[in-house]
Image (cartoon, rainbow, N blue to C red; front, top):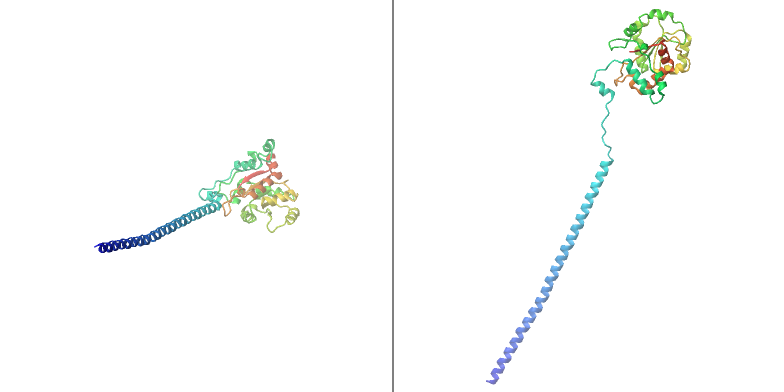
Length: 291
């Protein structure tokens, strides 16, 4: 009996040792598995954090790029010239309105504006043209010949009485050489036996015009203000016999500009008037007409 009990006790002890060993092995196996699981979790978390960081960086880069693009676009927009409203030209205005005939007040206003910042108040008073010097204006129904017949009905008599060289009785001022040739052609029914001279710069030298004026008696001159002024300043053309000055005021070119609408022509015209013609108008020897 005693031996049997001892054997049973030894078996139970061995069994318990075996079971405890198995449990220890299981725990030992479970520990590294848990550690592996933790490592995997930590690795996955680190991967996630790195991915999140990368996403943040890419998002920041994208934001930075979009900001740069916006700034570039803003700079480009700022560099682009702003569209300015086109100023209405004379052509635009006159295309939608009927042209009005010129009047003495128009010429007086141009003279006042041009000399207002160049002359004193007393000198400005001297530049005023008397109303008595102005002839009837063209009402846009006249041809040149019909207008000249109206303002100078006794032309045949005036023409015969003129005997002064280097001087003209009638001076017609226009904006260009081509326009001067047109006006000369329109004089055929008015001029009679009067001699006409071209007073413009195109293809004609000052010396040639000086010789023609000095050679014989000339009655009518048609030309541009710049060349007429130059001839007066060189004493090639005198104002001794001048009685009528006609400005080609109402005629318009292809751009619908009058002679006073072209700055160069307007300035030359005012300087020409100042070169002795204004004085003749004020003294009553020269009459001025706006054709």
